[in-house]
Image (tube, rainbow, N blue to C red; front, side, top):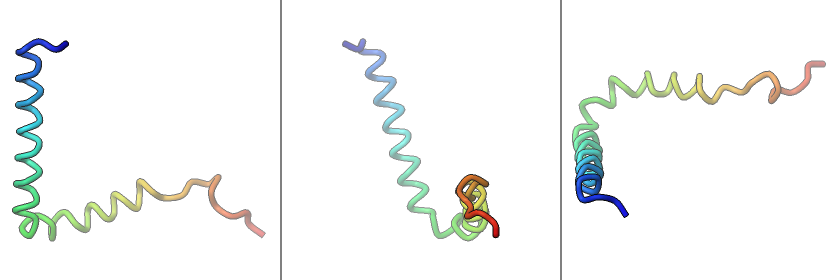
Length: 58
């Protein structure tokens, strides 16, 4: 069982995260044009196939 302080802290963290997500969604039209190209480039780098997944060369 968690202590009262621990439950309070975890609840506060959850509330802050939900508020931050709501604020980001609300203001998405302002930050998405700037972050969109960067996020797409980062996603391509993260999901780039490795040499073991490429077809063998002929």
